[in-house]
Image 1: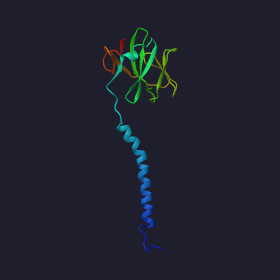
Image 2: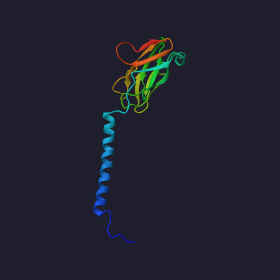
Image 3: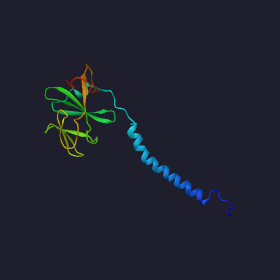
Image 4: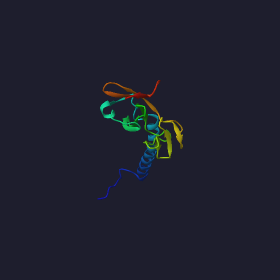
Length: 155
């Protein structure tokens, strides 16, 4: 059976196809810009960790903890104090690891190095690791965004 009149003309079909392609292309370029300007997450102001899980740390060791959608590192220093850092490189936000035998933080993405206090000492990182404040109460470890004061507390 042959239809006498078509629902779409060729011109209308091609215009719709071209308009859909253009809208898709525009969305591919606009979406990352919107995500950059309006991030989908917010960094927490504080994280509470159970003291029982972290009290058995020996000196010069680290434990990871979640800091929003990024990793955090809690480090026990030789003098018994705790230091906390956001465990992402300040170069391109790659995760960093702690190498206890060298007493340094290492970013494997572009060979970035930080000393045990989080200061950048080699590679492309432009700034030190972001430090966090540590407060210890009777049953928990409170980790807060850095402000004034020290980021080290005795366990």
